Image 1 (tube, rainbow, N blue to C red):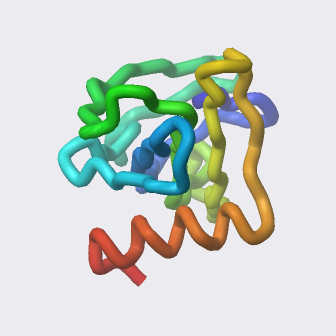
Image 2 (tube, rainbow, N blue to C red):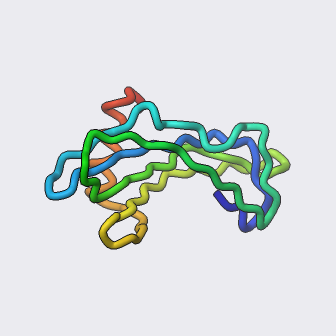
Length: 120
């Protein structure tokens, strides 16, 4: 997470992970890896970057794709403004590349997560 234009705080952002099996369309949602990325009290100054990691377990031996859905909101460091985050990213293991996902694929992956978690 990076705070480029202004300082940020009041984070309410969760990260969800989904893996896709190589050679098939089977995908799996890791309910235990869901986590809040930053606490509501954390502050990122303008230009500051915060990073982290999580261990993800998957039943697949050959993962082709890791989807990461970042969902939530945050505010400017002074508490003003309200900014939504709703981005899906895919890491393709074979290509060793990451892309932002939109359209039908995003709808399908987010729908699986929502169904698995009960969120709306």
